Length: 353
Ligand code: NAD
Ligand code: TYD
Image (cartoon, rainbow, N blue to C red; front, side, top):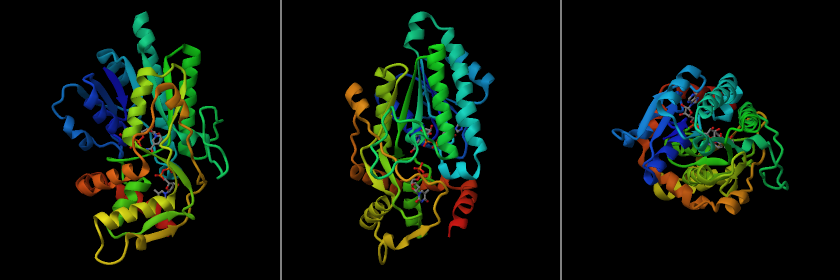
C-alpha cells in the first residue's frame, strides 16, 4: 500500500478519490483532522477496505512507528501541512510545528522503516513531498517564471515553513540516500477546497450576498492549477520521477486576482443569476495582506519534457467545473464552514474593512 498524509484535506482527498478511480492498491490515510480536514469528503469510500484511515498527528513519532510497522507502505505521498498564508500571519506556530517539525518526524519514521527493507524494496521505496511555488518568493511582471533551479526566497511564515520542509527532504536524500521526490505546485482550485481560499471564498460570499473582499489593488498574479491535473502530475512523479529531483507543477494560467473574481462573477451571473444586477456589484477592495507576494508563475516544462505530463484543463474549463461543483454541493460547504471557521472570518476580515 501507499501512505498518504493529509488525505482528508483539499488536495489530499482529491488525490485519494482519484487514486481509487485508476488503482486497486490500498491507501493508509494519515490525517490529524484539523479544521481543514474533513472525513465527509471521503464518505464515498465508506466500506472500501482498501482505504484505511488513521487519525494521527505527523508530529507523533510513536504513532507513526506503529503505523509503519503494521502497514509497511511502499511509498509515502506527503500532503499534510498548515496551508493558508493569512492564518500563518495571525498564528505562525502551527506552521512551524506541522510543516517543519512534522515533516522532520515523518522523515525519521520513514527512514527507520526504509532502513529495515530488503535491497529491492529499499530501491523501489519513494517519499514524495508536496510543496508549493511560494518557496521561490515574489516575481515582478517582467521576471521569468519559477524553474526548478530558482533560488528559494520565501516571504511568509507559511512559505518559510514549507521551504524548511523542502530543505529537510533534500538533505534526507543527500545524506541518507532516501529515495525522495519533491513537487512544487502553483495555486490549486477545484472541488472540496476549504472556503478560506480565494476561489471558494468568493463563490460562497457571492451566493450569500456578502462582499467579495479583494486584497490591495487586486493586481497580484497567481498561476492556477486544477486539482485533478495536480493529482495526475503527482501520480506521474511517483511512478516515474527521478529520485532526488524536484518538479514544478503549474497550470499555465497566470491571472490577476481581480480577473479571477470577475470571471467567477460572470459564471455565477450565468448559472445562478441575481434578481437584479451582477455579482460584480459585491466586489469590495480591502486592506492588503502584509508582505503580499506580487506574482507567482511556474515553468512546468521539465515535467512535460521528462514525464510527458501537462494539464488537461484550461482555466475556463476548470473554473466552470469548480463553480458547478460548489453550486451542487452547498451542504459540504455549510458543514466545513461551521464552528471555528466563523471566528476565523472575524479575525481575518473585520480589520480589513
Ligand atoms: P489543506 O489545508 O486543505 O489540508 C491539509 C490537511 O493536512 C488537512 O486534512 C489537515 O487535517 C491535515 N493536517 C494538518 N496538520 C496535520 C498534522 N500535524 N498531522 C496530520 N495531518 C495534518 O491543504 P491542501 O490545500 O490540500 O494542501 C496540501 C499540500 O499541498 C500542502 O502541503 C500544501 O502546502 C501544498 N500546496 C497547496 C496548494 C494549494 O493551492 N492548496 C498549493 C501549493 C502547495
Ligand atoms: P489564497 O487562496 O489565500 O492563496 P495564496 O495566498 O497561497 O496564493 O489567495 C490567492 C490570492 O488571492 C492571493 O493573492 C491573496 C488573494 N485573496 C484576496 O484578494 N482576498 C481574499 O479574501 C483571499 C482569501 C485571498
